[in-house]
Image (tube, rainbow, N blue to C red; front, top):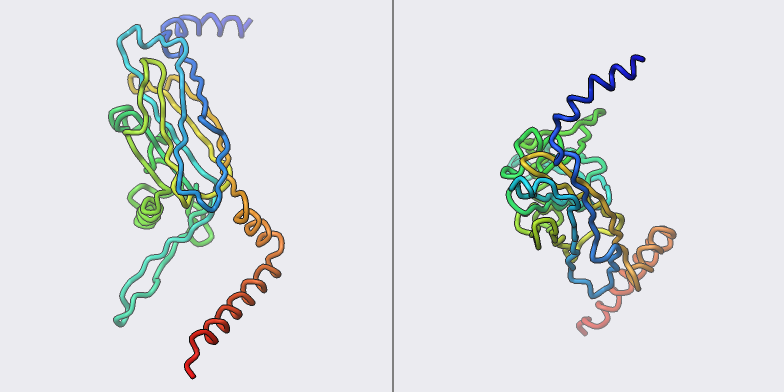
Length: 258
């Protein structure tokens, strides 16, 4: 009886919700779900296609916005701060970023500030400034604010390497409900699993979401070396050391002055 009463009380509230808020359905696909890296790899672009089914908001004259977030494999990184001490630049402090995405791209069809307000951006983790970057601070772990100097330095360094990207020009609508996003992969892109998260907004609110996965792996001689170095680290280290010694000896013979 109590359940029936609760359902009757909730029914008017459900009827008052706009139909558009529950109508949209998003379907996405990737141009490829696997990228193989060989010695001649110079970078690549992956296309993400999406289609919004049951587009109720279009009937109200409200256009859609799309935000595509791509996160690569998780790794730990250390950011160091240097200061001049007695005329020398030395490391005075450091922070370790734990399980941070090795690759991060946030792509949209227009600036994030025009798509949603600050509260929605924080709640939905839109933009690099709102992506969770966990730091180790002594024995503790904590997510840091966007203006933390170590976080800013980390993002700047990764951005300079082409591995952290935020762009409002890489998503375009082909029709009112069909869109295409271009995900740039630099030559130094890491290998592993990449998670693709696509969110659709209307009138500043999330109305649809879909996810996909991409795998990047090495092939050929590079793959053999990477696997062998991982599975036989001692032998690989000795072989590299012997090669270095042999190269040095050969160079001394070639360039020896009599």
